[in-house]
Length: 465
Image 1 (cartoon, rainbow, N blue to C red):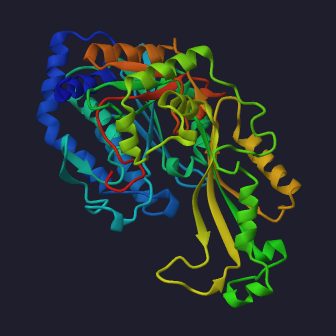
Image 2 (image 1 turned 90 degrees about the vertical axis):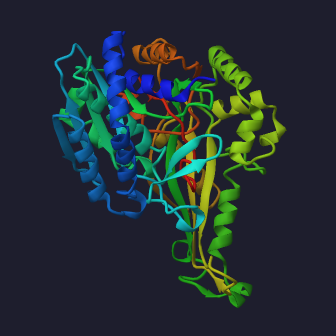
Image 3 (image 1 turned 60 degrees about the vertical axis):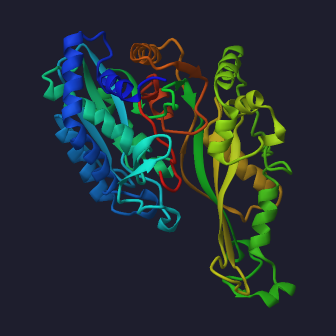
């Protein structure tokens, strides 16, 4: 087993030392990391203690200002708040007069929490013993994304303390709406000042900490797109059913918007819910290439199916598929998921009402050649054709899938740094999750983009992160 401490020390320096570093330089950086370790841990904890939750409009301005302060402390010379129609973005630059420039993506918002589900308060950032791992910070944002981002900033602090000059300039773009599918981030990136800076970059990375227990890591060559939306059935829009909640006894003579929504949802997927059945939804999908299938097979062969199942808390895969085929489906298949059904009474015990309104919170995950505009247009047409023109579609955010070439400079640099640090790295066609990388890889930016970093974590979007 690789010594995790040595691996992470090398990795922190590797984030900002893409070239072959002189041994003396790296030794100084590692010494600075050791010295600064208490401050680096405290920085992660303090960032977690200063949350911004975009979905609830909770302390977003404070979270933006706090994040801007972290960037200034790390040495960025320009740190600018970027207003949007929603929550602000951040544009920052660190110019050291280097020949090359690297783009960095940050996010400062986090997912919502239900404190009752946590073993420690979600924003207390306590250090606890995690069996099999040792001491770990628990808190919302610990792995997604404040821990990895703070590790990146720690590398900058260490470089400066060691008297070492960065070999690349940095252009950083951050948003506070990633967890609501980045509805306004494109406006930040395409701001003339930001766009001009990004066009000087070799590529863009988002810091991550996805190493397995033995230090191995996958390099994703893309990510699925995401579109978040709500489907809403109401008596008012339908023209049938109640305008508001009424006593449930009247169901004998009054239509139900809740059942109306269930009927509409049933048309969107196969009977088992595993295949999207929207008219024309699959028309433009690009299937996996032979090379992509090869990469999936390699990753499946090198992974522990039992560990993956245990991590998800599942016993079988869709259609009882063998693990390699399930992994291939994960990379290739677009999805429609119901995140939650909202409406009526959901408290303790029963409440005899007939709800006048019901909402399904949904999301698409898209694969190459699908676009946000296309799938939403087809969703609307599908519902209208089946008599559900009254079902409202409320889009809250989204973007298309992203792809980066295997031979791009960004991917080759990642492979080189992982190899130098002793971390076994495999290529994977695309992340099943999503990030707004498409805003960087698509015109007008048109840069290779991906995730990169060292470290361990778990529980993104879940209790006890």
